[in-house]
Amino acid sequence: MTEKQSLELQANQIERSLAQHKAPARVTGGLVFPHWIQFQVPLTSRAQASKIEGLAEELTTALDTGTCRISRHRGMVIIKIPRLDPRPVQLLPLQHGLVQRSQVPPGTAVVGLSDDGAPLLVRLPSPHVAHLLIAGDSDRQALARTIVASLALRHRRRQLGLVLIDPTRRAFGPLAGPPHLLRPVSSETRETAQVLQSLVRWTSARNNGHPKEPRIVVAINGLADLLATPSIHGTTRWALAQLLEHGREAGIHLIVCAQGPDGPEAKELAEANFPVRLVEQVTSPTEVGLVADDDETGAKRLRRPGGFVAVASGKSTPFQAAHISSRELAKIVCQTLKAENERQRSGTHAQITRATSKRSMSGRWQRARYVGRLYRTFFKVWWDKRKT
Image 1 (cartoon, rainbow, N blue to C red):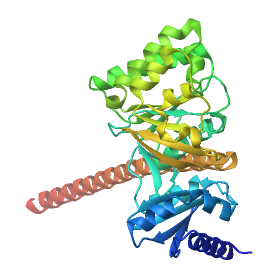
Image 2: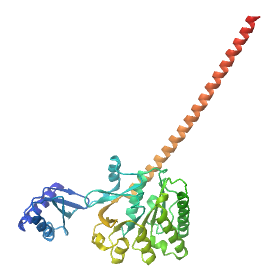
Image 3: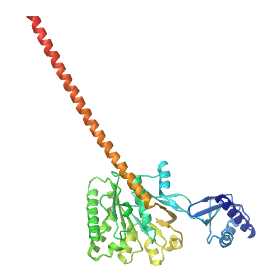
Image 4: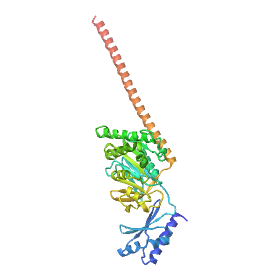
């Protein structure tokens, strides 16, 4: 059975089930997303809408999908069911299409697709964003890699600098080669503390008049591990607090991965300074309280790979995180290195060309002066002979 035939069969089952429960309506269209199928049913009255919204369990049983979501939108009832063959959202084609349409501003990362099919972007320079907290279990590191790769694809080295910190040594290995890296990936705790202190000094210098380019993105995997190390606990916490408070004005942004860090200090740090939080499926009320202000975000109801909720300004947006494979990351590293080398070669060639042109013009001018002196000497000798 083809995908089209399967969709038509499901639409017929929806119409049949609605008719059986005395809420007859027709499915007039729909959309197919990587993990969801959305059917549209036009409304004729509010009573009909209320009746259809009360048939979620009956439609779930009729379609044998395990779950069914029903909502209203612009005179339509939207019936959403999970796909039988869910597919990941691929970062590269998604970002390529957005860049072609000039829909990715500077400093913006492509994160994934929201449940209504709209691309979800995060603009780090915005005062409503500044820093990101990615919380969850299995997919938070993959999402962090996606965000870093998206930024590296969109910006040149003179526009973006990357600092990667990974005490667990599990998140940023495939990203060890892009030319945007300001230093190798930091994994030792003492080295990490020194890196954070140097970033604080950089922040202070930039806020006191130094140039704020390139924009610097600091990706940290393992917030709890950093704060739990006794020897650098105070230094690390102070440095993180300084970067979170003053980093945006200096063009420095943090992307922090955390698996529900314990302890009041970690919770206070996370709640006070991350306006935007990307929440994966979590398992305990404590973790929900850390990454979101309440359990109305839907984080505990997520049950699909790559499923997240973006929490910002008191609003939550469910989305499917974009995915990029290790092979694609390696290809990106090679492409960015090649492009950077070509830009350097073209810049060097232009400098050599300008220098050669200057030498050439200098040689022509010297020859012209020499010829002029010859003509003047010849004319003087001829004139002296004529006079005598």
